[in-house]
Length: 303
Image (tube, rainbow, N blue to C red; front, side, top):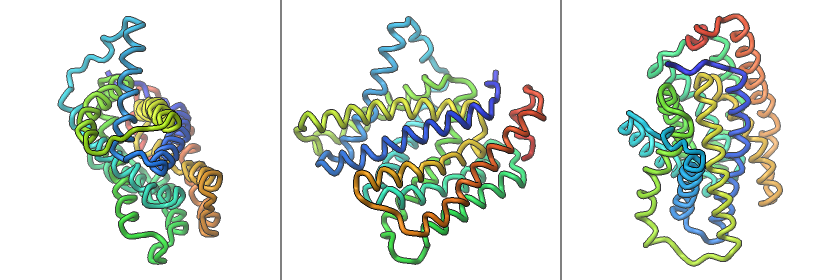
C-alpha cells in the first residue's frame, strides 16, 4: 500500500533535513581541516547511524521493522548513496561552503527530469517555472566562466547535484514498501563495511576534540537522513527537493562564522530568485492538496 501523500508535511520535513544536513557538511569540512582523513570521516558518519537505529529498535522490541523483501534494491541504494557521499562531502572540501552549495542546486533540474522518466510523475508548468526560477538564481550566484570556481571543484559539485537527484528517486521508490528507518539502516549497514576497507590506509590517532567531531557527524547524519527519507515518503521528489535551496542560508552563515568567508555580491542578487522558487512550490503544493482528494494526491495533479 502506498504511503498517504502529505505535501505540506513533506516540505517541512525537507526544510528540517536541509538544516541538519547543512550542519553535517560544515562538520565534515571542519573535521577534515583538523587532520581527519576524508574516508575515515565517511566511515564514522555511517556507523553510529546503524548502531543507534538497531539499539533503539531492540529496546522497543521492534527490530522486525527492519525486515525487507527488497535487499537487492537496498544494496543498489547503498552503492549509489556511498558514491553520492563522496561527491556531496567532497565538494565542500574543494570549495567554500556557499559555492559548493550553489552547485548542488542543480539537483532540482536533474530531479524533475528523472522524476518524469523513472517515476512517470506529471510535472506541470508551475513547478517547471519554479525550478527554472531557482536555477536562474544559481546561475547568478555561480557566475559560470568567471574562473573563481576550480574546475575539479565544479565537476564534483555538479556530480553531487546529479547523485542527490538520482538517490532521491531511488529512496522514494523504496519508501513505497519500506519504512524510513529501515531504508536509513540498510544504507548504513551496507556502506559501512565498504568504507571500513579504507581504514588501515587512512586511519590515525585522534584527540578528544576530533572524536567529538566524529560523534557529532554521526548523530547529525542519522537525524538528517531520517528526515530526508521521511520527506520523500510523503511528497513528490520534484516538489520537496526544491526546498534544498534553503541550504544557501546555512552555508553562508557557517562560512562566515567559521571560515570568515562571505560569498560575493552575486549571491545576494540571486538569493531572491531561489527563495521565490521555494515560496512558489510551497504555495502550489498547498493549492493542489486542497483541490485533490487524498486517494489521488500521488498523481501529482499535473502541476
